[in-house]
Image (cartoon, rainbow, N blue to C red):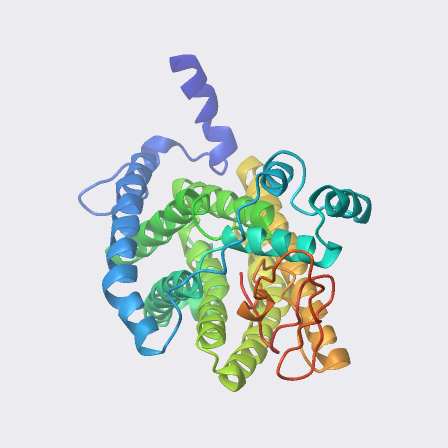
Length: 384
């Protein structure tokens, strides 16, 4: 084990030339980041989860009820053993051939069977109240941590001149504010890693899991080798759009459609500007070029920049989805569904009709007819 640890913490990988771990030990004059500090993030993540439970129950839920957000879930599908067996053991989305076979077996028309499967799928989706509470928590935390980051960074020299991220590197002391900022962000991402398996499942589950894992790794990596200054720039930049997205989702759940549309437009502009313009031109410029000039490359420098390029790849992926939604909105006059979401509006929960009856085609209030059992939602049915 000692050999493995010695190999893992090899100074020639982690630190610039002629720098050792002994040089970065805490002294009476200065405090530096220590690897063991990262253990603090795990109990803090548990605390964040507990605070979230209290917040959602005693703050978010009363706010949702005050906004007349429904606590009831989707309509329950009529019990049927044959259809339930197909749903649980074979498929949740039967094709036309299977629908015709079930229709003959049950003496139901195909439309009724489609409706049953749609209602059964919707049973597994959380209520609008649950979605609102989750979004309100994320909005509140995102707004707090972004506000803290801005207040912290505006007092630092490296916000105004990124070359200060590398002067005297790695002998840059760790301030209490910087340490707090890093630990809170790290605990947040750990809590999101844990809660992602119990939160609302979304289409981009894999991408978000990779994002959280990459964020934790980047935070830990930049903290250990004392790249925390540039790390704070990355954190604040990526936090800038989160609160806007959650606010748009809350407005959507509360049926404040115009506010939702406006917030989503602002979110899209901020997201694309920060992720596709500012991040590569400002952050990647300093990590790739200014650091090369001032400090010079070394193994962990290459690895750190590779991780940042992966982050930029995810930024491009989500920006593509946002632009795709915007194009749909322009062409159709409304957004049918955010590609990053599994949200379905409450309007697609049709009332059950007795088997054997041919149901009429349901139409939304704006005249949009159902397509394949899914109705188009409002202009801003957004979710993460």
